[in-house]
Length: 262
Length: 275
Image (cartoon, rainbow over all chains, first blue to last red; front, side):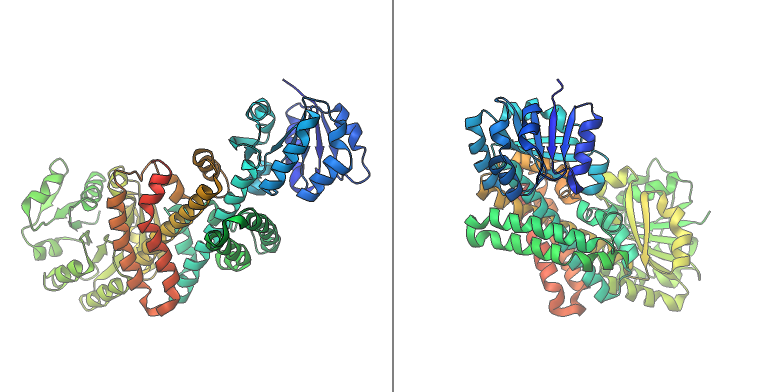
């Protein structure tokens, strides 16, 4: 079934998702920047509105700018960007009285997977809606996972981001030791990448994460990990070792990149 | 074709020797217990009566023994080095200390024998499929000359660097895998506290940026049936890693501790993932 899709926040990371949706034959209406745009107009013609904004942007767009009020009953809003699980639950709750279903569907895989339309879509929210929109998600994702109710998509995405950063930290720590011992890094890296030590985190350094862009990736990872830290704050001290290790992995990404590409 | 000698026809050594014979290399073997030779029944080979006789007949001698001490014993008191030809190569396929690889190289130098450390990664089934990864340390020219031989049982032969580098490569690989296991355990414990359902979370982590060989292995190759056995092997490797990095003192401790925790927690991770 084809439905009309509105997409808000189609710059940067949102762009390849929007392009894939259009290429798969969905009538697509795009708003690069919500400020000054006719959001109620977009809402009225859309069966589904995709958002790629931060939490504050989502809230402003949906509530303050009147998007939600103008949407048809039975339509859906999907947030593809990372955000807080709690905020996903809150927006889902606000949407319900309008007959609108709000889903949190952040994506994983990085820029290369985004270009190749091989992302993983990590869905939280109403089961029937996730299943109905599966074909839409499949236009940019090879794997669509429905994790659970509202907020679960964000939780799983943030856990995934944390685990990737922690895997970066592991790689960094062993490479530091290798350097200290005088083990030749290129040969060792070939072993680590192709062997049981391999990880997407390690494989990405060099081909995707370079000395030129490591600082940028580092900032993005730290943004995600700030959300992760907030999302697990209520667990108290039991969460700190995981948060600390993930943050260390992100903070040291430039060092890891220098060691790997050196 | 060079004549290849082989000592140590155990779980790992037997499939390696079989692949070498199948590739057409003249294979000479010696074994302390004659029944060990049964694994070569259907493969062309020559049985030598003594270590010295094997040494004299071969251009390359491969060892796949249990420990570094076994290698030194057979190389020195066992008469292997004394019997080998000048210009011949002694290859250790066992996992051991980089320092011991260098020690063996020094012991062999007066005899004009080159030594290469070439531990293999992959386990018995992978060895039988001739898909091992062989991780090599030693003189680059010698390593290059032996690469076709290693290729008979390997999907990948990686020259890491000078003597001892093969052992470093193998031990660092296993250590990083165990550390990645610990990361996975940490986040699944946390996910449990968050009330996140494990099966879909696992699917997310396996398919996206968080994936790792360590995580992929749980289920297909690490199961509740074999996890205790794997843990024992991993802790043996971590003893070697601790020894290999001892010169760094406390700097290596966080890595050792984390990998050991990963090995000790592997049964918990396997259970959490229902494998």
